Length: 348
Image (cartoon, rainbow, N blue to C red):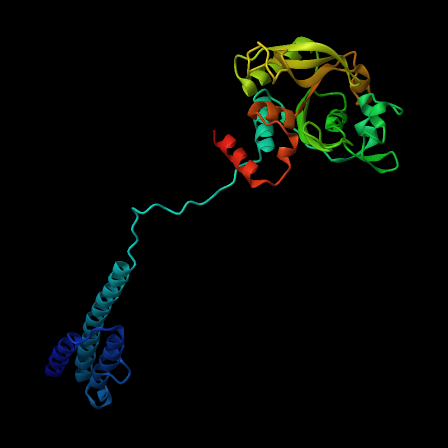
C-alpha cells in the first residue's frame, strides 16, 4: 500500500509540472481526487480487507488526499496570480497624466447672498422662518395695519387669485404676523423670513414681477431704535466691509412707527460721489422701523408691554450692489455665460 502511495505522489509531481492553465487544474483534480480518481481507487476494495488493513488503508488514503489537494491548490493559486499580474501589466494607468476636468456648478448668486445674510442673523440668535407664498389677505394686509382701501391692495399692484381674499404674497411680512400669532403674545421673537414675493411690476433692469425679500422681526421688551441701528450696522459691515458707515433717514411705512430708510456709505467711492451712489456718497439698502402698535395688537402682543423693530432687504438689490450686477433680469435668465460669471464670483 505504501508503495502505491509513493507512486501516486511521484506521478502527481510529474503531472503538476505540465500544468499551465486553469483547465489543466480541473483535469488534474478529476484524475487524482475526483469520484473516479486514482486516490478513490485505493479504497475501492475496502470491503475485502480485514479491520486492521482497513484502518491502515483509510489512514494512508486520507493523508494522501490531503497532500494531493494541497499541492493542486497551491498550483491553482500560482496560476491565478500569474493571470492577475498579466492583467495588471496590460491595464497600467499612467497616473501622471492630467485628469479629466469635470465641470461643476455653483449656488445661484441670490441663494449665496441669502445664505450669507442668514448666517449673519443666526450668529445674533435669529431663527430663519418660512411661510406660504399663496397667502390670505388677512395675513398679507389686515394684520399689518394695511386696511381695505389702502393703495397697496390695488389689483394693479397685487396678484389676486380668488376674489380679494387669496393672493400671491406681495411681501414676506405675513410670515412675521404668523410667527407673532404663534407666540400668543407671551414670548420674545427674533426671526428673519427670506423668500419669493410677487407684485404687478413691469420687468426691466430694476423691477420684476417676482423678487426675493429678506425681512426680519425682533419683538421683546425695552427695545429701541438704537437697537435697530446697531443690528443694521453689524449686517452692513459683514456684507460690505468693515469700513462701511450706516445712517437712518425718516420715512413712512404702514406697519412701522417711526419708520426709516437705511443707507450705507458708498463702498465704491467711499463717500466722494460716483455713479453707483448717484453722487450722494450713500446707497439705500433697506427699509425698517419700530413695529407699529396696531401690528403688535393685531398679532396678540400688548404694545404697552412689548415693542420691537422690523426691517426688509431685497436680495436682488444686495447682490447687485455686492457684485456689480446692473440688470435685475440677469438673475432669472438662462444665459450660460452669465451663469459662469456667477460661478467665478462664488469662487472668489
